[in-house]
Image (cartoon, helix red, strand yellow):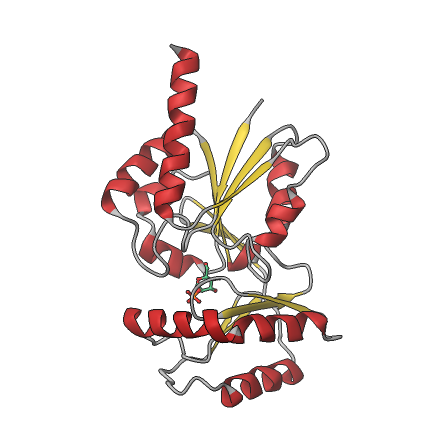
Length: 247
Ligand code: M1P
């Protein structure tokens, strides 16, 4: 049976919004060279390519950005789904940002991407240190989770999730990472999909895909990781097992 490996990027293959670790990228290059691999990030392709070396992106079977709204093969965009977000939703996001109890504002609080709004109270211009501080505060205050729930429980035809450390992704209902399951299975109907993500948690942007991959016979599987170290370890175990099978 064909196995296809699906990986989230931030927090799964790289530290959030940072380049891949050099040694891990060497290991991962070898892994991608010998396995079918698809990347699926909440970020857009531009951000993904700042983090994952081009040599790796070019040998992946495919790369989905914006939770599936854009798709690339070998650096070429094959599609990008656009969406016009309504003023009502933008006004709600602006109110969330303005009313936040988090004082620091670093700039770029609403980023429009293909098929996605990315919103952050601290702002996308936050430094790495400012990100960490916001994230620690958010873990206590649960600010993002509350807004994610508010959007998801509203009658608006949109869904929200908390993907990385400082922001929330908002997409039209159904435009989440789970779309990748059918995309991949349409090309490889008999494949078993193995997904790695760091946000397979309530309100997390990897959860819809992990849920979609649950089947009664356990054909597909999902693995919650806490960093690229976990991913590395799990892949090392898998490659060691398959080498032992061959030997
Ligand atoms: O890929 C995970 C997330 O990475 C970034 O999140 P943050 O800036 O909050 O760490 C964003 O690009 C986000 O859209 C994406 O889901």
